[in-house]
Image (cartoon, rainbow, N blue to C red; front, side):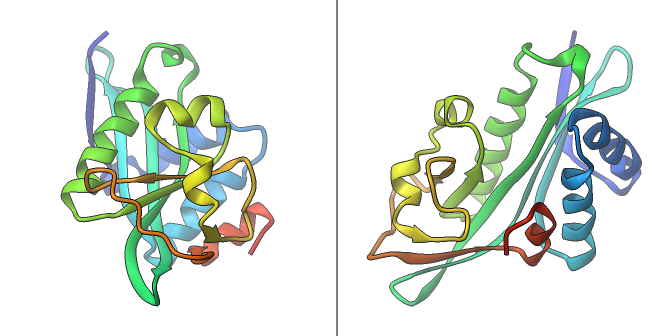
Length: 174
């Protein structure tokens, strides 16, 4: 199996929507991506293609966040969602997507990436609940994690603000 990672294009929209709808029990993640697109809050979407079959193997989405540190805006994103088609799971596709995305985000000057998810999965990419605890968010808790990019610099103060794009309200929190 040969997997190629590339930025998503308009031609991928239907395939990504289908992947999200089959990868999750509820349509919330697909609805989230649709709303992020409509609002113009998408920062980066990468897809993994199986080069042998021209099949979409996976996709990862990063959206804009409003994060302030010391009263100043800091370039930050939220990872959500990541999905890998069933035949490609546990073969490194998610890892390849996330690592490629982090490289692009760091090169673009993004300072922090946040995620809400399973710590056992996301800590292996450097996401840390302790870093996220410095930020006030409706998602605060053990499953809210942050990854400092830019060489690991961690901008922090006392309970800084971290707000997801408004589309995240489809997941049940504002």
